[in-house]
Amino acid sequence: MGESMQLEDILIDENSNIRSAVAQLERVRCKVIYVVNNGKLTASVSDGDVRRFVLQEGDMSLPVRKIASSTPQYLTRYEKEKIDAVFERTEIYSLPIVNYNQEVVEVVFRNGRRVRRACTLACPVVMMAGGRGTRLYPYTKILPKALIPVGDIPISERIVNNFVEFGCGQFYFIVNHKKDMIQAYYNSVHKNYQITYIEEAQPLGTGGGLYLLEDRIKQDFFLINCDIIIDADYAEIYNYHQREKNYITMVAAKYRQKVPYGVVVCDGGGQYEAMREKPEMDYLINTGMYVVDHDLLRRMPHGENISFPELVDDSRRRGAKIGVYVVEEDAYMDMGQLEELESMRKKLNV
Image (cartoon, rainbow, N blue to C red; front, side, top):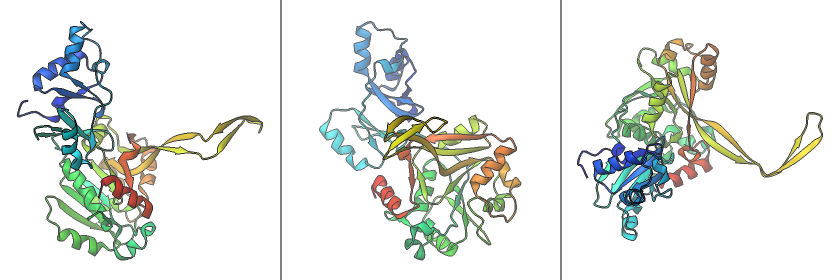
């Protein structure tokens, strides 16, 4: 197993052919590579799978998914304390670690070696941290929403740490309510990133304060609310935004809702046609994370209270390209209400 191995070296796209898998296994000299679809783990293929297929004189031009195991063992990145136990009770050679978007973030080997993706995303991140967080009362009677703890770390710091993992080091906090507490907290934290505080003289909604950044940001940037966590590959989101030449990319999460009643279907004249018993409806919901073209900053109205979704609609009306990047339902965590805060703590294992 080469010392310079990168995570990409042990991942293979599910549409690649078996011949490519053979060459990859020989090149990296490890026993297993992992099959992905858009970075999401779908299967594994071992040197034993390949040998059996070759002995059967199978068609090497077939997609690798034809010989792969569709039930690879894995852990989420919030279950790392279980790694040793998995190796103790199994004979597996390596173990993929995934995020809640099912993307492989790391592979751990039985000998203790870990291979992670190289993180070089260096773009600004703007966090809307000025809200009152009325839905989180009584916590927010004392603390600003950005400092509500999730485990032993404030929500905003968890968000920042996630971006830092991908190479981001410049953050802009748009602050208003209890802004002195936010600054005091981060002044006391040892950090390897820089925060610039942008103070609103009055609350300007989830978008209005962006006009204050016009002379500060000169490249496309992430915009995120201070009460959500998106557990996904931020580099891939940013690359998608640039690849598609979007003006704004909205990160949306899958959401399935089950109607707990029988749903009546009628025709246009009000006549009964059918009954659908407790149907499930699929939606895409706005998460509150975006990638934004820096050109938007110079177009912002000054001092106007406006939501960012309104800015999205305004941009679309003037012909700008608005894209949507979809993540899995589990990858979106929102602590906007007390019960959701507890759910977030459980998912993050804190």
